[in-house]
Length: 468
Image (tube, rainbow, N blue to C red):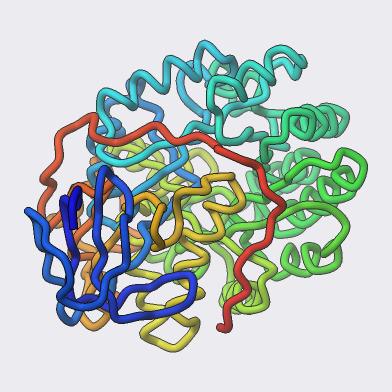
């Protein structure tokens, strides 16, 4: 077969139609054909015997912030770790320094990532001053979505949050309307600013070294109320609203009550699915994340929401801080920086859920890849089919992944104490981006090999509703 550069042979392939026994032919960065076993020739043959070939993960919630804060990691270090974890595309959140809140800054971030990234990248922008011209210019520069916080900017970080933090509800409504005008999704970190302020005042009187103090400072009602308000506003605004990192049973109930009222979707993260407050107590401030990791009952509710389609995305919320930054607030859950690296946990964790019978492999990959491609208009990604991008992962569903700081590639490996020692059934063996192997037990590609990714279309949202 002419023009074929690579054939992946003998793997079990996950396609939109289900698992099939085919060889996958790759040409010019895309999937050229699904071939009968043994058919065709190519300069490169990859043996997938006994393995599964899956769409690469599309992580729609990722923080890098580079080139600021090099002690937290760089685009190279964190996209290298993402590749090792089976992520072929990430969306960077706009909390850079300064905030990614204009078309010029989208272009600046694009240029920086293009020089250093090992995997594909999309850029999420802050809606900035909410002007028609500014929001449209960011869309035209290729922003994949907008992001807002319903909370104020953290003290001393105004330059990172200008045009991103909207604690005032009138501004939140304006941001939803602005995103609706240009047809891009708007992602919301939803916690009620007023209720948070009250809860934090109370929490300051508690034991600041106790993990439960963080739960007291950010109770689940703060999340649920903010989500309910946003969903109510969206009935007027008509935006393509996406609720970030859902943590609680109370918020799941809100999402179900609003089902069908507007175009919205929701995500959760591995730390909420695989960890509870007891694990945070063990790991200390290294496991502080906003919103907090909650109870076993909340965890169970999130899995129920995944099974019934209320939550259709699982993302990392990867946030790398330095070990020194976390350690400096070792006895103060209210002052410690919030976040944990998750790029090397996401895919193995969800494969482990498959191994344990929580969900099907088809459902897991919809949560990690297919739903994101449809929601954010990446029509060439998230599926293995002729004409799609060859962004693929070869996995061993029976092999074990152990999360250890000496094997992790994230610069923040020593901060990942929420996961240190974790063992997952399922292992990423090879990561292929645009037809080229980036990871095969080691990083094989060069920095800058990742491609900028932006929406090609904005279709009506219809997440896969695979059986659990």
